[in-house]
Image (tube, rainbow, N blue to C red; front, side, top):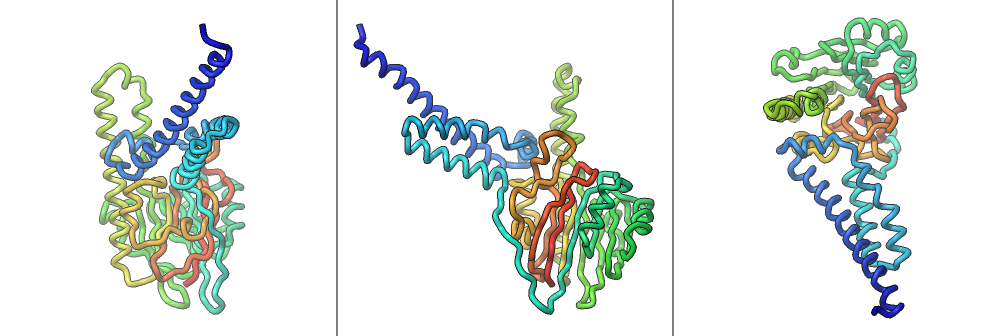
Length: 343
């Protein structure tokens, strides 16, 4: 028969074992998910889907484990859980801690707004956001000629250019190159913006969204017919490949320019995407330079708030990034972003 002291030790030992196993499992799963997204990414359908999923569930065990480990004085495990929390907060969730820079006297400052308006051009919230941004360049996706005509009557001193879904409002003269959208089969337009200091090359982009192909996995046909699952996987791969091709077309064209370059729009690629990392080498992500917080921009049309950052502004070395902000919801399922640049 066990002594009372030994009988008390047995549950404590089991509790310590469970706590150890759960803490190690949480750390291993968080690290494995992070490495899978960063190293595999779009090379696999599973990790491609994982790139677009919310990452906050990995934080659910954090407070419980930290309190339990502190209570039981498991110091090394407590330290491991803290490291796991930092992995979740910074690389996995994409937290950045930066602040705005002061402008250099005598240099041109540009405010660039990028916004996928989601065909919602006439909403009072959107019009209010465009006014409040006080941007020099309004780089808008999913618009049309009627939208531009509406804004022209409401906003005043912008020159408007419309190509397919792309609408640009500029306080400076603008010319549009031979439409790359038609020539390369890629969803972007290249502009030449004539500043007093000299021309700037601006790209507005919006490659295909993964939303429709991934929604095929939720259809009833998948459960009834296994061949539909294979077709859905093939569609996701084709969609991913097309998006990568289009973005590489933009980046390669931009890299060949000898002018100051701005690339703005809805990339449809979240953080940790290897395609995003490899495609835009040589350009600065303005959020990573001067953004503070998570910078999430999509989706806004549900109760949880946005959980990914896909709307971006890139620049080449001709620009100095002064600030980056995400604006409040304005009637779209995206949030507008504003980058402040110095030339």
